[in-house]
Image: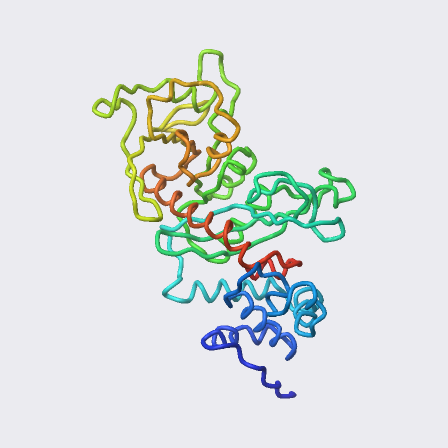
Length: 373
């Protein structure tokens, strides 16, 4: 067997890490491209990490630089398998005592969108891009992150393909919605041996009945957000929304809280706030049901307001950890106090990852680049 040619090493301790993937990269060019890509991602830069920035070249005019073209070929044309690279990365995380997951962490599900002009790129389409807060032409990737109060890291990612890419649109058997992709990723994390206490997600997934049902069928506990005014079918004299369910509960003041329980929430910056939480009954959900409806608020006295909040406030309510609104509702199958704290910390850490990391790492084309993030 021909001896492998030595590869120029990555800087400092990064070489020891990169070398653990060498058996998955068949050529010297692949091993060198892998090291150049990792180095570009981790090196400090003064601008967004586009392809030219990753290769440390000038924007636009440097696009034809050999180092840029070499990296472009590695990411888009080379034959290495991003699935195997990611499997090895997760295996290393599980094997290291400093990063090994445990069953008190949470599996955070969310999606991240990047703008992308044109129609030729795979997975591109006009769709909701959460990080920009509007519908635009772009690519959305569904992701999972393992998190606890100490650390967080991404596990798996898969791009969402809009229906117009399929011959039969939404009726095509290969078409999958974002909640369906998220459920598959949750199963993938479990099958990879990643322990977690619960799956947590915002109301983009929590409002999806199929998503909650498939998680329950898979035996995966969950804590997911729900829009405050999400309605259900119920008899006329019973609550129809979480706000209605809250109105059915008793509250006088902090000294006489009635059905509400004080919960101290610890935020990422270390400060604490006292919130009020309760188990409510709505349709088939309640304190003694398989799935519970947990309502948390900074001021239970506001529960008497049944009018819809302004659209901007509603959008804030949809986030599990952005506590700028008075109302936050969750479907929960995890115990209230610790489940609430775990979900909060995991979501806030994940929000930090998806809101800031894409801007720092750029929006490199191709699914391989996205999986390596």
